[in-house]
Amino acid sequence: NAGVMQNPRHLVRRRGQEARLRCSPMKGHSHVYWYRQLPEEGLKFMVYLQKENIIDESGMPKERFSAEFPKEGPSILRIQQVVRGDSAAYFCASSSGQGGISEAFFGQGTRLTVV
Amino acid sequence: DAKTTQPTSMDCAEGRAANLPCNHSTISGNEYVYWYRQIHSQGPQYIIHGLKNNETNEMASLIITEDRKSSTLILPHATLRDTAVYYCIVRASNTGFQKLVFGTGTRLLVSP
Image (cartoon, rainbow over all chains, first blue to last red):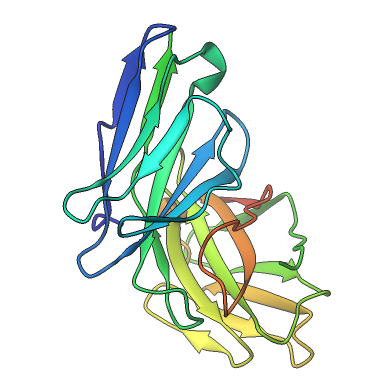
């Protein structure tokens, strides 16, 4: 859905560098979710954030990965000291709430390539 | 969340209806059925969701059996642009969209 904006669309990093992925949710949405899709695999949940709070980070690797969703500005997924295994498509989704009647919309993703 | 089972792949002729089945026999009373699709390597696109009643929107119809153990997504007039991987997902109404289980989905190929 065009409403969820992710940038950059493609990111190339050398091993050991930092990768910063940005996600601007749809207008009016305060819930953000990050998912990762490895080549030829399904999407896997990483982290769920609301403004200024991490709600659930159970899918995020314990080291090198962090996420934030500040009061102002986009949500950021940061990967420090990237390795080849971090190469994947990272998708962000947003929703207006978590109740049953809501939907979550995904952005077009950031494709990270580690060389 | 309940596990879903979908056929690996399906074919459909352009202009015909595409009926994509999904089995969710262990679904709980508070779990919704959601359908998303992923065209090539784009982001997943929301299609439709429902709890127990049949639903219809501009993209598709969702038919949920009375016992809620299975559902069918119907694309009434499939086009070539509907070629994608379709994911059937169940989600509890009292949780967010974390931990959606996308599985392997159904690869729908629409041919001329």
